[in-house]
Image (cartoon, rainbow, N blue to C red; front, side, top):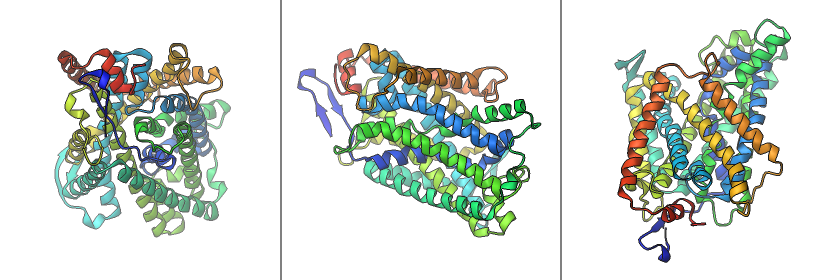
Length: 484
């Protein structure tokens, strides 16, 4: 689909197919959010907080993120275009802020994608150990095998083809995969509630058992919650593809629903895991969520079910990153912030074909590199996510002043909610950069990765700006679909 503005002279605005539903958006946000962390990292957050400390950490963290999410919920249906946070920043603050936010989001989605294909290959070998091949070479502390390469590349390639052939296909796949993953997780939770014992939850908190140590244990988990809850913002990146019959307000609802479902999922998974065996014993296993069933109850099938659910979670996370990342790249290119070829769409499928191709190259390279180099990228992605969140929350305040008459299908009732969103997002960013913070990025590697990415983006941005192929009025139309 190509929208043409006759009064804009040379400008034409390419747009994407409008096929997604409320269910698709909730699956996009939740499926991207959950992933594999509940299988691999559950032992980490339980060790930090203890059973109750970890559950309280996720509940409190989720409730706090709702304030950030409400800012996304107001702006997403008000500015329902590809690029989400990038478009919000442009409307509120102009071109420079739009590039900054857009490029931060690109880091989050593009660079996490190869990490996910690496994890897919690794988990494939765990589920099917007989298929594991001998190591080919080592990168850092990790070996790379042919079985991990072909499984990761194959799944990545299938998802890329699916996204290339249409948003409807990739969205339906996301919905089906997310639903199946939740069903598998529900079986895990029900079995744990029936067969487990609440005595295994004791002691409820990590630490010395004092009030102070219990609070510290909860805060330690609270600090890492944003890392595991990133994903609800993918809804805003694909807002332009909402179906014509969809109520615009539902875009805002989808954001909030995905956040609530996300922290409830993590809380129930933590409870189920700790019911199966004494938690101080469970955290000693590499993948306790899968291992406890086999050891505590002799249920090999349940352990395999958990691993299968984790595999589905990886696929939904990767699919969500491809959808969101390609839309941000497409929107930035369409708005004159990145090279023009990234803004091309497929004539038949109405998908951002070149943006998907660009992400695809990076995604399928992941299994050849292995986990050693890619792991720091995930931590920097958390900073990118929360930094973009700060701008989005403040954009709500700015647009309430700058564009008070802008139509807001989902409107935040209390201004205090907006200011809390700004405050919470700033605090979460500080937790990632302040010295001695439990979530601080590692110096200097992760800071250098962040700086290098921003330099690459600035070079690409300046090259496009030198072409002067868009006036500011045209840029506004390309990004927002209107010059108002």
